[in-house]
Amino acid sequence: MSKIVKVEVPDIGDFTDVDIIEVMVAAGDHIAAEDALITLESDKATIEIPSPQAGTVSEVLVKVNDKVSQGDVILTMVLAGADATATQAPEEQLAEPEQASTPLAMTASAPEPQAAPAGGSDMHAEVVVLGSGPGGYTAAFRAADLGKEVILIERYNTIGGVCLNVGCIPSKALLHTAQIIKETEEMAAHGVTFGKPRIDLKKLAGFKNKVIGQLTGGLAGLASKRKVQIVNGVGHLTSPTTIEINGKNGTTTVSFDNAIIAAGSTVMRIPGFPYDDDRLMDSTGALELAEIPKRLLVIGGGIIGLEMANVYDALGSRVSIVELTPGLIPGCDRDLVRPLEKRFKAFCENIWLNARVTDITALKSGLKVSFDGKGAPETDTFDRVLLAVGRSPNGKTIGAENAGVIVDERGFIPVDKQQKTNVANIYAIGDIVGQPMLAHKATHEGKIAAEVIAGMKSFFDAKTIPSVAYTDPEVAWMGITEEQAKVEGIEYTKGVFPWAASGRSLSIGRNEGLTKILFEKDSHRIIGAGIVGTNAGELIAEAVLALEMGADVEDIALTVHPHPTLSETFNFAAEVAQGTCTDIYIPKR
Image (cartoon, rainbow, N blue to C red; front, side, top):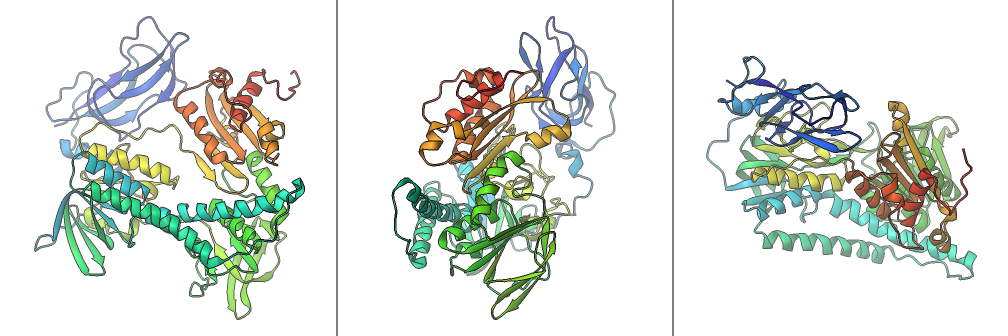
């Protein structure tokens, strides 16, 4: 039987009462020998404490900011393998080794798996990937590169999933168009006047579709070169080793050694609305550009809703926005959202906050919308309504229960840091495993899953995942937000640089942006950052790298940035925090 052992702080030299600055594991994690467990920091060095053996973490007994010395217990763990010998803790009655490798929190409510269908399968692969979005195709291609035979299942006719076909990519093509339209209008203030744009919706949709075709076609070529077989249809797990695919040509049964679930999410709907009326759109419908409505209501002041508001405003619609919370882009610091709100208020017909839609009635003249909330009208009528209130994971629609895979009440599939579900040969990645529902998170998770299947010691251990609103102005943030730091009692210092003092920003006619960096008070290491302004989504990457590398305020302040650029505002914000910035005046405290 397996044994539980205590893992203690080893001999770390003359150091005692050393601060823990990072805990890198949690209960249920699978760890290999020499995997880092915690990071210690003294006034002389930073030390990573490795695991002496492989196993599964039972309980973590320390936390960040604890002080430890040699011999202090870090955690308890179940050793991998039945022949392991306990060195410090008594033997306990536990599960067999192959079950012990499953995160303990996942075993309580696992559904009973079904037996593989009689009659065998039509196809077999070492790795089956369900869903070909950014996470799915990345997982499939990485597994193929590592020598695995791969089948990639996609419900659309082309691979790329929601992101490439009806999401991230087409929306950015239209946002680029909107940006050009707005810039030509604003150039009048600088002495250059253009005529009113003539919009050909058919050609504009053609441009958008051409971008989609270039990317999806390129992915198909990459799949072919890697010998990844694509099967089109809707996949439904039927056992822990089989999946049924319903496509145009009937049903295909595929057996597999390992599966990676990358089935993504779907648009959330509010019950009772007239979804049979195509004037009530979701983001996919809005991207089809069926028409330019005279009046458009956007339900939801989050990223997707605001991006589409930008597009339709530029195309000529009078846009109103209704948001349930007190502000746009919930979860983002208010000082970052404020410049965006100011710009949106200048072009939006209405922005109703702390308000909600209670009913939509389809009339011949339009969609009659009923509201509830301070400042909102009792009713108003719009030519079209865009519903953008979030997305829901597809965990309950893929037959996960037939494979014995745990799915929570919201439709998410719990996984560990190696993307493993509670079923040994089934992995999950992307939207379906939890927030944030972002393509760049999914791609990294996809690589991890493929590498673990191939026998590599890979783990998802990103310190942060950046968020970007591709609005005008763009808003981007990463790490700990200032609001979060206040709620959690994290002591911090910050530097804020206003773009009104940026030569580059002023030269492109924009002065509303700002760059903000948060630093941990004692160590002065970066813990969060936010940017609002032109190309904020491109600029945030430097902050992410700084956090991953453990940079402190001095590292950023002393890094020479090119001038004049928007990127140097990141350097200036660090100088503000340091008290050395000469590009703005900082009163002495």
